[in-house]
Amino acid sequence: MKKKLLSISALAVAGMLLTTPVYANAGDGHGHDDDHGSKTGHHDNDKSDDDHHGNKKGDMYSASKEVNGYTVNFMIMPAKPGKEMGGSHDVMVKVAQNGEPVKDVTMKTKVVHPNGKSQTKSAMAMGDWLMAGYDLGHNGKHKLMVLFKTKDGKKHKTGISYAM
Image (cartoon, rainbow, N blue to C red):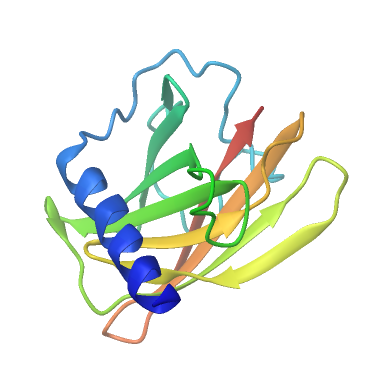
């Protein structure tokens, strides 16, 4: 019964995400940036010069990054009470190419918390999105990074920062 409820709630979250627009590149940032610890603020294989500040709408934060011809959409939102799937926040990531979601992607996620401690988790597929739950409810800047492998066997990495 618990697995069935978990599946139903996962499908509800996925359905909500599929009908919710991603507000990428809004430009105001609301305390969020894309400094990933490199001198340029971009990973070595992140070829984009675009401004990747995200948008916060209510409790939901979204941002978009370009890497190796892929658009990586991030969505971070508080987990609904009683429906936490690994932490206080759901970190959702969608990989797209030419405007279409990329299927058959495997992804590892990593969060470096403000205190310097880090966590790594595999992302779980939920429709066109991949998800991992993390505790992001404490103040400070969290560095969110993803490493994804596409069907051709190539690995791609990018990330954003998220501040409470």
